[in-house]
Amino acid sequence: MDSNTAFLIYSRLNDRYPHTETHFLHFQDPYQCLILTILSAQTTDATVNLVAPSLFARFPTPESLAYADLEEVETIIHRTGFYHAKARHITGASRALVERFDGTVPSTMEELLTIPGVGRKTANIVLNHSFGIDEGIAVDTHVRRLAQRIGFSDSTNPDKIEQDLMAIFPRSHWGGITYLLIRHGREVCPARKPQCGACVIRDLCRFVCSEEEG
Image 1 (cartoon, rainbow, N blue to C red):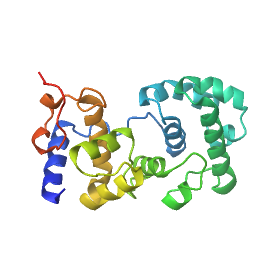
Image 2 (image 1 turned 90 degrees about the vertical axis):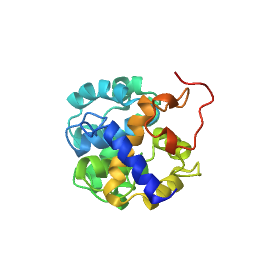
Image 3 (image 1 turned 135 degrees about the vertical axis):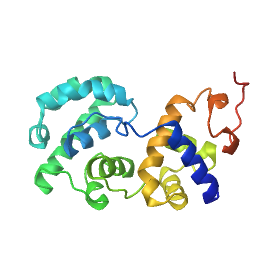
């Protein structure tokens, strides 16, 4: 896709979804941001936000979560799904913070990727939300789906999709495009029954709805 079309798409989505709330997860600090982002895999942000108060009331610091009883952690996060693996990931991440980073969340991609349960998507979210750093573009299920539908990328690989998006948009738009595609994916362009008739970029998108709208 050419840069002019991409910019027009960005502008229309930006007008449609003002950045009044760019953080879908409710966190207070980088530690909470990291833990909640790990928990958000394959579940909704709303579900993660429901368990956050109980989780951080019990484990308010990396030190308290690092060596927590796994069964207790699993009980608290159970509703997020895949709770056995997630409990291991968030306690392991907390141990990494305590043992290798003096209890603080690192602010570089390279360091974040050494933490259990952290891939590029999680690292990008933590860097952007906690430190205002745009090192890349977080490709979640919504970003991946819309990047393919709109025509930003022909790949199914999240890393390649990220590279394609980074090549199209300037760094100043990297955090914004993640937010805009997630909002649009949730409200107008879900996996099933996209509402093409209500889409502000319908004339610029290569996806054709299979059903009549409206």
